[in-house]
Image (cartoon, rainbow, N blue to C red; front, side):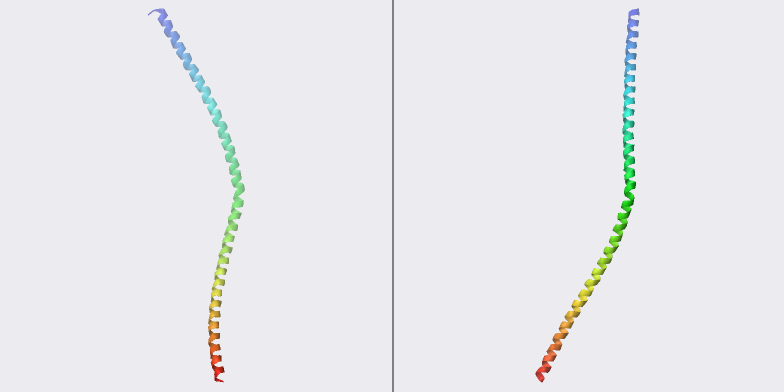
Length: 119
């Protein structure tokens, strides 16, 4: 082989190596930039997570108090329903007694009228 061909092959190989080295360096820079961006985003998400966790801890006592109040209100409502049912039952009984008393009054009135006629 001639020296020119060998020199051309060596120069071509050096150019290829330089291009590969340049590509590898650019990829390394891109990967580093990506790592930094992802680290920044991760930090932001960690801060958001901490803020939400703190808010959740702040809301826990309020939620417990509201749950307790809801339980108490439900018990009170059950008592009120039971009392209303009892009053409704007593009202029905009073209506039935009133009807029965009205019927009795009618019978006694008839009997009184019959006795008055006999006088």
